Image (cartoon, rainbow, N blue to C red):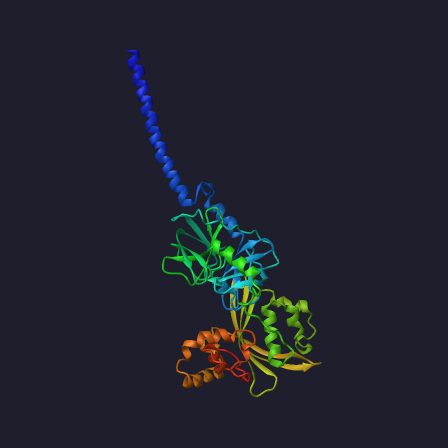
Length: 425
């Protein structure tokens, strides 16, 4: 009887051990699946809350002249990565920090084809670490962070969660992309896509978005492209440059004034104001009104046809007010005088324009020139985008519409050109 009981207990123990081993195997398999979804055992210890809080400290808003987007710190010393299209038309983008203050950035290198740009501010923020993608598996959870809809949606950086799908390669430009099941929106481009551990797996890229699907430039490509940009003889070849020539004529004096404001070089802007305008105010008193100014963009600038040295202008501005970007539009003129061999802004008459329509952004003189161009070149409309890009390149603001068309179509132009005063926006 004792032998029977002993044998029964042994058999029962073996059964319990076997069943327990089976359950442990199932549990282990489930844990393994969860680990794989989260990117491995090292990342499973991380929580979403901790990751989001850590990454948000490094994510910034980037305000260009004609675009807004996001960016993130990749190196100590204020080195920030963003998309090229965010800063394409702005050599001095503004960076809004997580504490709602802002800094004027300097573009240090860019690659238009890869849609990457590296900018620098004089402020230290924590840098994010780039992930190695060799261990990344399908369905791994990822997060995109940034500022959707630009200044119209203030507050902390938004978070979008999704799953990694596959790698896609652009052989022409040598860029690898991560395809995910997230839907991106305007403004989040340039922000980081991170894994659960808070490591950067890619940079969100607008313009490559389909319904229910988004694409990010991979961290492996970011490393390679940054290395190539650093080694380039001209890492700023794709960046628009502003030429300052305030003593050239009255028009350039006004243009320089607003470009100095754009670049936050307020001291230089103040130097272009005459005593007649300043009327005894100090620089500090005058500059106080420009503290919230993020950007000034000239929409139209041209000489008055009747009054000498009167410069007509239309412009748009962006102010940072209570962590929200406020857009304003102005039109009017500056009278400019030559004093002591320098062109100085003498007297303005400029008013704010509320809710301007599309026609407000178009110079009637240029519109007439466009109509004349259409009579000569029926296909001109398909070259408009390229003509506009050419007009924004340094030194090309002196080209006529015919010259721009010729350049866009590959025709050599004559060095003698009539100046078009502005471009329809």
